[in-house]
Image (cartoon, rainbow, N blue to C red; front, side):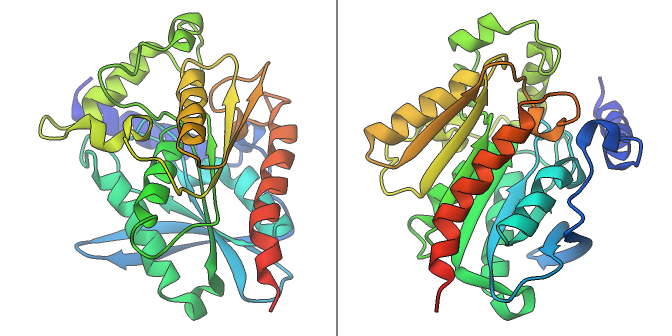
Amino acid sequence: MTDDQVVVARDKANRAASSRAGRIVTGLPDRRARIEDTTIDLPDRRLTLRVHRPKEAEHPLPLIVSFHGGGFIGGTAAQNDWLNSHLAARCPAVVVAVEYRLAPEHKLPRPIEDGYDTLVRIADEPLRWGIDPANIAVIGESVGGMIAALVAARTRTDGRPLRAQVLNYPTTDWTESMFDYPSMAANADNPTLPLSRLRAARILSTPSTLDPYTVSPVKFKNLADLPSALVVTAALDPVADHGRRYVERLREAGSAAHLSCYPRATHTFLSTPCLVPAARPARREILAFLRAHLRPRLAR
């Protein structure tokens, strides 16, 4: 496919995921949450944010910054409304889903810069957003989980430590070894993430000037002192071992990390809850994890 064809296909898929008909797959948002689209101005760019707020809650609230999946070449924040609205209503929290820039127009590391810069801007304007800047977590699925992990690593040294990170079936290795994990061979034919699509995503999103080790958290030498992590994986997913190995590396470094693998789940299962029953218990687990790490610190 040409770059133009990729963009056309992406726009068509995103319109479908955002449509009312698409809710048959992506699930209905929680009615106790209000969803609004807004924009944020960052240096040299403007991004769209999809903001989920509880309809009834006292301020300030914890902030959860969310990153969708799509291989850096597709995906949209709306595909995670089912999960994000539930977290906003039940945590409660302000959940901000970032429409980060996508390849092939915007290659790595731009999506990661978008994620980090958005978190920093919101944290610096707590009154505007109604959030508690001392209570921030990140969450992401697939490559969004990779962004979340990289943002968490960056905040470790910039004076903005996070309380928690939730990585749902993340890709954590974007190097040439990303296909060398046992789960890749075991689930190579799974239609939710064909290896051909994963290879195309890596080719289209990675410029020749980028060292892929700088965007592959499982390859980082220092993984100490990172926020507590919940890594949710799917047993039928080619990248299941990306998440498993990342948890092993976090534990080796002394960082708190919990791995939860759902045996009958496939890649993207938390954004296709009407197709995969495991999405509901996974959502409950994620909510409990975030509540444990964010709510106790709300007391004044």
